[in-house]
Image 1: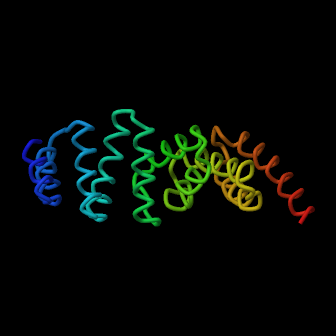
Image 2 (image 1 turned 90 degrees about the vertical axis):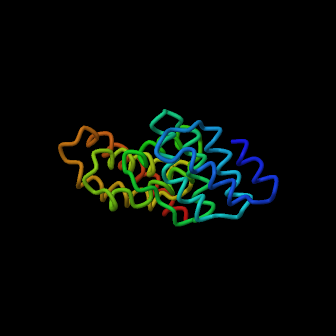
Image 3 (image 1 turned 45 degrees about the vertical axis):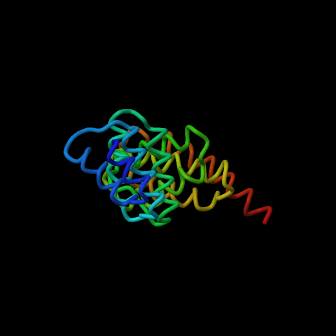
Length: 184
């Protein structure tokens, strides 16, 4: 750590980041070490390095039940690359739920975008769609889009434990959508 600090003080942010990366490659590292590494990457304007590290760091944070921090890192990833999409469906579902729980409706909906297409057979797809659709309709004024997502999912949930709640939500969102269309 001291070597990385010395390199950073000399202005060699890339060298400092490499030194820290070498410390946690192949073994666990503290969150403080990961955060310092990210700090050096940010100061060195190494967006590619931040994106690469973020992919793994999000998974590590979720594995240690640090969902809030993982969501914050994911938000950083999306700031660096608005098209960034986390690749692991179980983790995406957790992050969507975390964003919804913490009142980050736009982020939750953005994370859930296309989940049912990317992971069509994933058992959490109905819940992810329901979470996103409810936020779209109730918080973001996107009743028509919410209704469409729910309708498409309603065909896929036959026999699923969430079939009834999804249909109930679809009915409620359809009523909202009709009211919105009527007032337009």
